[in-house]
Image (cartoon, rainbow, N blue to C red; front, side, top):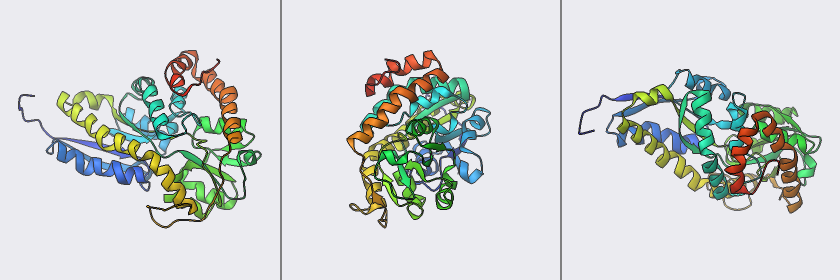
Amino acid sequence: MGGTALHAEELSVVGSWSGLPLHKQYEAPLWTETLPEATGGALTATLTTHDQMGIDGGDVYRMLGDGVFDIGMTVADYAVADSAALESLDVPLVAPDAATARAMVDAARPMVDDIYAEVFNAKVLGIAPYPPQVVFCNGEITGLADLEGKKVRASGRMTAKLLEALGAEGVNVSFGEVPGALQRGVVDCAVTGAGSGYSAGWWEVSTHLLPLPLGGWDPVVTAVNMDRWNSLSEEQQQQLETAVVDNLQEPAWDAAQDALENDIACLTGNGDCPAGEARGMTLVEATAEDNEAAREALVSEVLPDWAARAGDDWAQRWNDSVGQVVGVSIGG
């Protein structure tokens, strides 16, 4: 920029769930400390979260596209009502570890960029994971087959379809309402990230934990309104994107694999809990048969169902990108 003094830009930012580690450990420091420091005050931010604003997670990217705020972060699965194609960012079961999940997200990124540009008038800055979405049950289960006939809160539309293919009833309950629903028997089980469930106290209202990644990794997309992005200088754009990648996306992925093991230890007392007090949930180990049954349901029912709703073009793009990484082909 030849040393030209730029006027400071203040960005209005809406983060993901305020009470969960992703926001507290990565999002909040990025916007309130790191970005202003890295840019010498040229880029600053005012930060809130969708739950603090009292808006639904599904409204975040719609409002972002309308320019209500400049930058939004939430679970991509919350926005699938606006784009069936977006469900393919987080396919359940096919990523057993963080490295595979990351490869999946990287492969899907060009599709995600196109969806956000076309549907939400937004530019994607980064994609970070929540921990894998596992199953909490308030009542005894011994394996996947025991979910049959049970009412289970799903963490996304594809997860709901998978649960139904396995004989369970997928129920739509917002994250904040799950503890009450489990307590009252509105749902028998619920799917969320192990760490999210620990932080939100789901161990108080559930007894058994099945750490099969039935809900995938629930990627959180950070995106900026496209008009706002285009109003920034090239240097500011670069600073913004670099800050999100280096301080949110990368460290969240680096912590993802250990986080799952630590979170299971925290929920069950099997191992040390670095996050605080270990709880006493019963750990139900998923068997090879469980994995096989779930994957069979995914390939034979869930993915073809998605392809029919999203359209052949998206199914082909998924096969050529994500499908190559995880060794799954829709319709093949």
